[in-house]
Amino acid sequence: MSGHSKWATIRHKKGAADAKRGKIFTKIIKEIIVSARLGGGDIESNPRLRAAVLKARGSNMPKDNIERGIKKGTGDLEGANYTELMYEGYASGGVAIMVETLTDNKNRTAADIRSIFNKAGGSLGESGCVSYMFKKKGIIILNSETSSEEEIFELALEHGAEDVKAEDGSIEIITAPDDFETVVQALDTTGIPYESAEVELVADTTMTLDHEGTRKVLRLIENLEDNDDVQTVSSNLEIPEDFDVDE
Image (cartoon, rainbow, N blue to C red; front, side, top):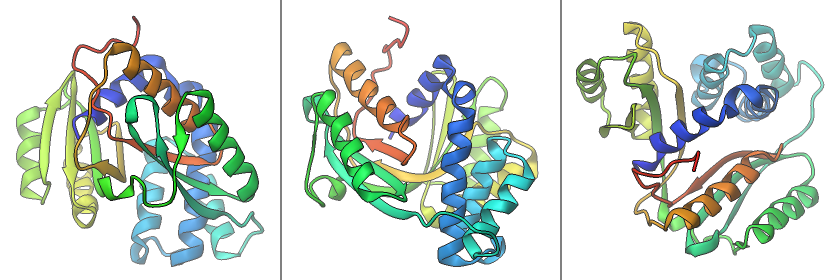
């Protein structure tokens, strides 16, 4: 699981969060709409909506945008009807890839995802071909330069975290989905800042490639994430400690 904090660092170096803020907002709003549609607009009684709103706040999304998204989901405002679709496949080198999407046009999304895989030397697979390798986990990434490692370790484990890892300037807290919110609330209560907090698919086991192979897979993941319909991309690629995105 340790590839998450390394990938977060790579994203930060590339400035993706700032450069694509509008795209990030669009993806989060989709998740808010679907979450409210499926579980109602009450944040307190809808865990999925709470997680989406948490992500929105972490990305500095204006409160009005969040409220409009919830109202579109509950039907109080008109909005698109999004469908959840999961794609499974392989990147070059045999790396397993899971792609979670929200779309208002299934045919467009399927064609786009297949094209991205094919251009990167990968391939889409049948449903179930790689999903058995992944489980849902809460992943919280913090900057070790602005947070006390000792305090975070103690707090996270006290509130039910499964594991805490520090590497490459980042601290990664891993939780079961049911304990994710408890740990996040504990961080908020104590005023400890975090760079990202999401429930996502995490591979049970990972695999490594050489430098060029790793770069090729990361390029595929970036291209997938750049698609408007893609919400999250998960892989079983372990990014080497010495991997430098600038090389």
